[in-house]
Image (tube, rainbow, N blue to C red):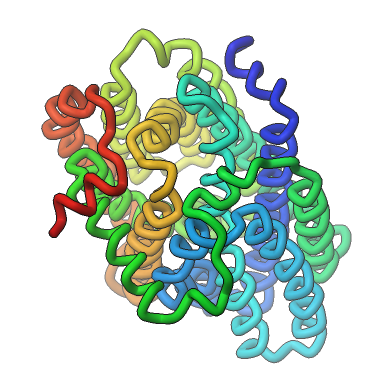
Length: 428
């Protein structure tokens, strides 16, 4: 673990890490509070919660071909910082719309804020890749996993506590403050021009639609020609559906099956349980990461998580449910650390933004589709147990797929990764 924390000796990485942390807080707290606001206000219409989640994922379909291109062609630092300023402004606007109470306007602002936020992480990922050395990528992935565990541990509880104590508008105000702090931290970074502008300086007037479509096509060709990356993309497609499903079914099982009268309180306990599992699992996974092949951590963690997710469907007691949730959280970090540390190693830095711009829409399409299916199928066609079994099948399926294809591909890509030019030449 000491080796993991050595990356904080790089001041710019520390600022970016804290900026990413506060940015996530700016998304999580308000999102949780807003979900419970909808459940209280529209208790007999659970599809509103699924619709709100869709407003967080659907915008990627509108900006997917621009996000990665901007991250590779424009100043990554300015993109990341400006995303935070704009998100803060939209959070203030959201407070006003909630006061008015007109749902179409509320969902429109959620859509816009989410669309702006989609530009942040490709730019931030490119900056982190340029700041760190290759041997530090796995350590950074482990820290990201630890951060996620903290949000799982405290995020839901903090969001619910804010909703109870200061209301949904107070929670959204916390979002705005978090985005402002994140923007200040990014602005304070001193990052070299070759990391901020890996493909040289460009102006917005240079970025016509034809050029952006060509750049996006180049990124897509790069991902398709890169056999290892291509097979990982198939997994990301499934990850999106799983993420979208988990964002709502964990609330549904508490409200509609296990503890209908006290589901809000038990949601806090669930968040603490899941976060504790992720935290302990992250520490364990970081400590054993060098003892296994990276693909073994990936498909092994996914397989165990998938099996345990299926077991959740059998839970008829909330305590049993929390124990199983802890087990799922304990094994997931192995997969997350593996894939988080692998991507920067195999992707050309000049293409990182476009690769992220390819991954994100794949995940968002499947996430939106999963939420749409749940909104349509639950509870008319699928029970709570049916939802968990479906998600279990998806996770186990992708783990088996990875176990079959990744070992051979990993051996092939032990050799130096092809550059952007070589991959582009191979395409034509």
